[in-house]
Image (tube, rainbow, N blue to C red):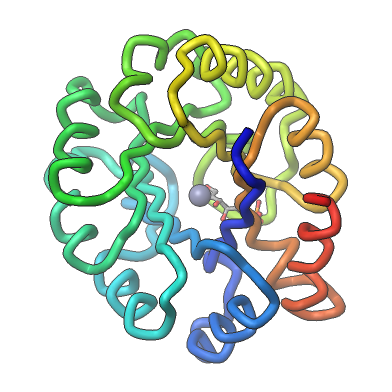
Length: 220
Ligand code: DX5
Ligand code: ZN
């Protein structure tokens, strides 16, 4: 079983103080920085591009976990990897040649990941397991931080965990959306090992360190 990791999503960060906020995440023991890239087409929101990835890369040594919620992801893989992405996750729903794009991500030196929307069954990714280092199960509909966790996601997490075990491949299982300490514990029980959180960290009443420490407690 992989070690549990926390991927802090900067979608809820204060961008006027990004450097300070990333330092706080580092100091509190955050493992990865999650960067949510949205194009206003695949999802109804527009957020960040390679420029922000490059900015984060200059600020922190933490691995940058880039989540592409964009159409035509294959066109943008290279600039994100050049900007410093460690992981590049693309959506199965967006790309008809997903295996090719995943191979391209690996060839360019990053870890390929595939994401599933809440409406997409686990079976959709069965044939591409050999091409990925991570599977991301969306636990909200992608587009915004601060949404409510969809409880039906738990059974999909278990199904994906069984698929990974059956494959014997060293694939991470990441969950993303509406996750705080208690839901992280439920997701661990269902088989997740990598946890994305924006609101639970950046909007924690006790501050960033308190938010991160709640996850680290849940991981024990
Ligand atoms: C949603 C994004 C998530 C989001 C998580 O489309 O993929 O990474 O930032 O935010 P919270 O933790 O607030 O649900
Ligand atoms: Zn995300």
